[in-house]
Image 1 (cartoon, rainbow, N blue to C red):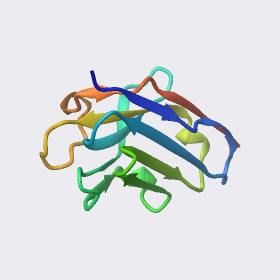
Image 2 (tube, rainbow, N blue to C red):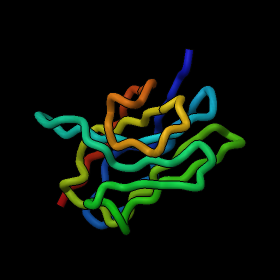
Image 3 (tube, rainbow, N blue to C red):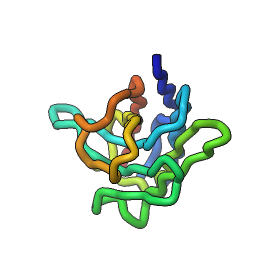
Length: 121
């Protein structure tokens, strides 16, 4: 059973930084998604199995950085210059295939429980 355990969410003010962590029980392609109230779950960022490739949604480019520590089977999402519109529940996800990085939630096999990020203006 694959487990993904997230941590690092919380309250922040606009312009602040937060770092999310996702500890996995194995090594996978990892993604971060977010879901605001009343909205669909949207892609944020993904990183390949090796860590050599990354992908971001346009709205976070230059502000968020996805990374991983393969020795710890942990993925991170460093979020800088936070905006109120970044407020959402953030989910990490794992893709057991070695396919090119996907932005589609249905292509990920395992999901974390979610962590709330709230950014005030």
